[in-house]
Length: 266
Image (tube, rainbow, N blue to C red):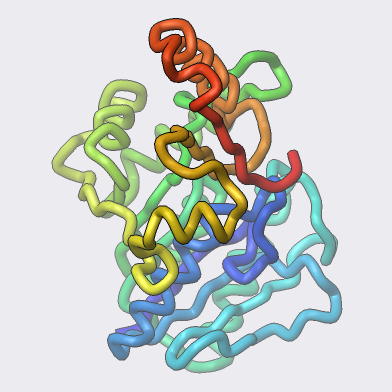
């Protein structure tokens, strides 16, 4: 089996922590690695952002990253990706033709990749499995200003994609419910597949030893941890309000309660 994995606007092997390089990049990369370990061949197609980048990078056994030069070979606003979408689709087709490849299906990630996936489906005649990761309608419900709002164009494109995809992957039942409520999605079309966890990296540790190693207060001091990029959309303000409420409602915890935020720049 061979899968065409699409992550157009951000490379699955990009350095993490920037605005466009976070959880989705990890998800796509690790999913591809796990599929490769099971003998499934995966080509991850992305837009090259470096003129010196090789077209093909072997990431793991059976897993390759295919950098397609479409538009400027440099970082640019992800909303410009649509402008160069026909070029991306054409280059993906040329790559497959040049290597005499056929794919069993396309797995696309994020609404921008969904547009390319539907175009490639028409050429390759294979089904598309799509995961949105975020939805414009949901982001707008929590936006605190025009600079955080997604365009009506994006929402319209997402609505069309939901109707057109062969299968949609949702990480949680809530994700599926939001697609049904905001985009009139057919629940039967959506498969709920929870995100996995790297149990080699994330596993239970001795709390006393861990706190000592990180120079954190020992128990019974209470610690609340948030890990995520530092930006308004992540809701760090909600954590701060929650800590304030706890201090108000549990006065005995004052001096014994801390919030920790771990994240990169905005």
